[in-house]
Each structure stands twice: as structure tokens, then as C-alpha cells.
Length: 105
Image 1: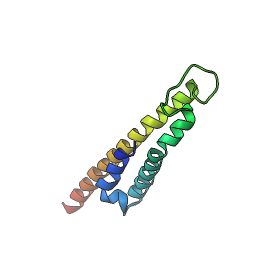
Image 2 (image 1 turned 60 degrees about the vertical axis):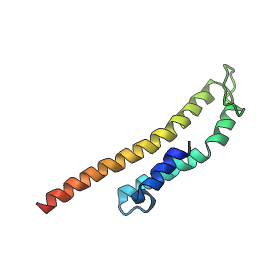
Image 3 (image 1 turned 180 degrees about the vertical axis):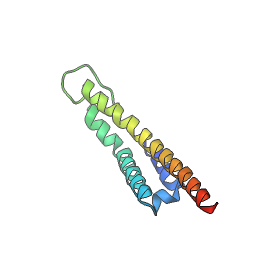
């Protein structure tokens, strides 16, 4: 849960030391995703009530179906957040390249 966001963070220098407003926003989002990745085990334990992260059909929140939905949102959100941050960064590079190419003509 921590490795994907950290790979993006350490792999893209502009997200570590942003110079533009968009990259500062993306860097903030990525840092939030990294923090959620670090806190994934404690949060998941609080949701499931056990370290096997197993849920049941009981009515109470902890260990129940509502907590399971939040567990999966958190788990998928960490990966999707890191990937979407990287994709948005790549798309911004394409637009900056086109803008620079147009100004050089």
C-alpha cells in the first residue's frame, strides 16, 4: 500500500519539489495518499476489528458490511490516487510540450 505512491513520489522529481501550481496540488494529493498508505494497517484494523481484515454480516459498524465498504474504498483509493496523480502529471507534460512547441514556431 505504501510502495506504489512512494515509487511515484521518488520517481518524479517535480512531484517532490514542485515548481508550478498544478504540480504543488498533485504533490499534496500524492503526499496525502502516502500518509493513507502508511496508516492503512491501523485504519483497516479499526474497521475490521482484527488483523486478518475479515468482515462478517453483523449489524455493528466495526467488522460489519459498512466497515467492509470503507475498507475497500481505502484500499482501492490508495492505488487509484497514486495512478491518477501520475496520469494527470503526464497529461500536463503533454500540454506543456504542445504549448512550448507552439510558441517556438
